[in-house]
Length: 96
Image (cartoon, rainbow, N blue to C red):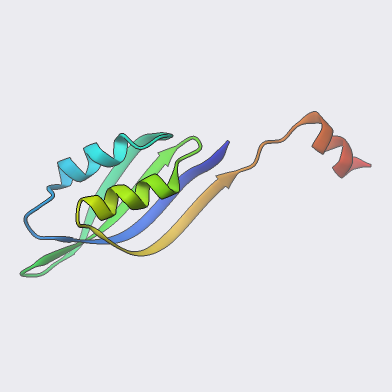
C-alpha cells in the first residue's frame, strides 16, 4: 500500500555520483524494491536522468534527502502511483 512508483527527472554532476552509486543509495530507501536509471541528456558538466523507483510504501522524503545528500538536483516528479489501503469497512461505505 502507499506510494508504489515514482518517476523523477533529476540532474547530476557528470562525474559523481556514478549511476551505480545513485541506484544503490536509492535502493536503500525504505519501501524501495527496484530502481531504474536512464540517461536522457548529457552536456559537459551535467547529466539529466529519468529515475524510476518501484516499491511498496516508498518513503518520498527519504528519496529527496538521498538525492540531496548525493548532490543530485530534483527537477520534477513526472509520475506517481499511489495505492490506498482498501478495507472491508471502506468497501461497505462505498456500496451503501
